[in-house]
Length: 232
Image 1 (cartoon, rainbow, N blue to C red):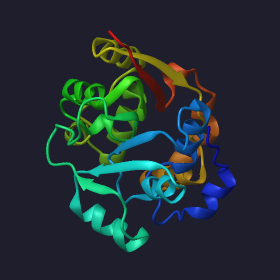
Image 2 (image 1 turned 30 degrees about the horizontal axis):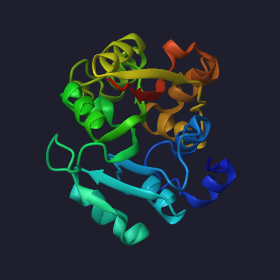
Image 3 (image 1 turned 45 degrees about the vertical axis):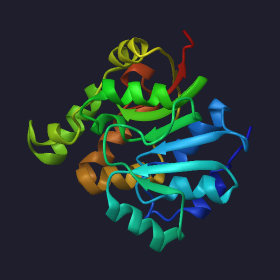
Image 4 (image 1 turned 180 degrees about the vertical axis):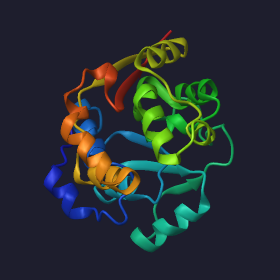
């Protein structure tokens, strides 16, 4: 099992270029213990390549997919050439039973057809393969996005596939995945900056009253999920 120290993550990532809550995401990957140097990994939604670069430069066999070519170009200016491909459809451009682990962070909630997505992830995973993902909680994210967009409807186009914990369990089970939820603290410097940027001082005051890391897993603002492919 590879272990990545949080202090190292903070040294390697700049808040100005950090894509997603990398500190929390790496902590989650550490706790699952499913990735090592022999693991064949696919990251879906690599953004500007920050996490992809982190694993690639540490000698891992990893591929990245991203739908926005502009982000891939941004990654080149930040990290040089990475094993990055453009995702042009819902079909993942890889053979069946190809990867040991698929990872995605802040991606699942943006996918209109989550059933098709899970079918494809299942297809490219090897027997007993693992899907590691983070996605916002439907109940808490609706409140955040409504305040952020100052609208009850504008955010729905972007966050079109939000799920509650029991909806995740049911949907993943329907696609032959067994799910486990992880207790991962998400109130990092990145998280605080994001809240302040979108909600201002009001958001910081809310965090002082209600710490999302102290809530029951079913009420957390973000779900960290390990989904193991069930062999039939």
